[in-house]
Length: 312
Image (cartoon, rainbow, N blue to C red; front, side, top):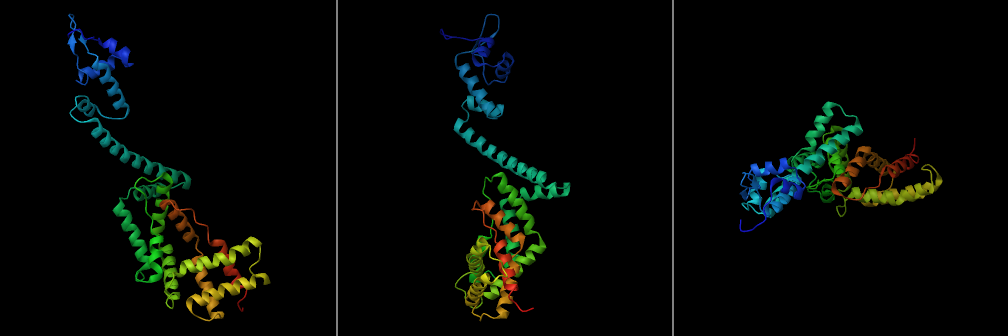
């Protein structure tokens, strides 16, 4: 071998930290072929065998299979190509593991039955197209006939979940729960009724979306009252109720009278559904938005305050 240093299997094992059995296995499979043989017939290896074995061990630790490793060390394929392909494969495995972890975490929290576990697993495994069809089906049921209404273009977009390509476990868990809400017929009916009512209220003035206008006005008027500990039926609440009713009357173009206040109470009651709050919370988790502040306290206060001023 022209004076090159040659190593026995034992020498390679000591230099690489591998066992003699492992080195012999890699030699038998052709990944680290011998460079020569001793007079007694024992295999001998050149200095490049040490580098090969170090590379093989690294690639094995990264999860590559032996046929692929052999192609890399024999330069049949480039290491960057193999690394890229393997990274893609690992990404798929990571997604699957995240889905499994999210489902199992949800099952542990809920104490789910085997039937619920099966449903959750199916919902978590939906493809992007299947998820979009489920979302479209829900939004179509809620906003059927209202998509051209100016008040609901932005509302529809703001209610659309977009699960990222590589979701975190909590995003997958939120998606599973949201997908279950999509199929809750009672929730669909409630949301559809709310959309119809709000569309009716916007018939006179299409410049802004009433859901956001009403919610923001309610929060602006009522939140300070809640913070100050003002009771809904107290005289201190009178100007707040008057301002809220006047704002609503201005938005829909009707006089502030008992009929308008009954209508306002009806609207607030339709919005005061805990499933609506939960929907918005889950949506924020999935889309990576800031957690929304619950509207329930101001809705409850507004409903009580309005009812306290209505004739019995």
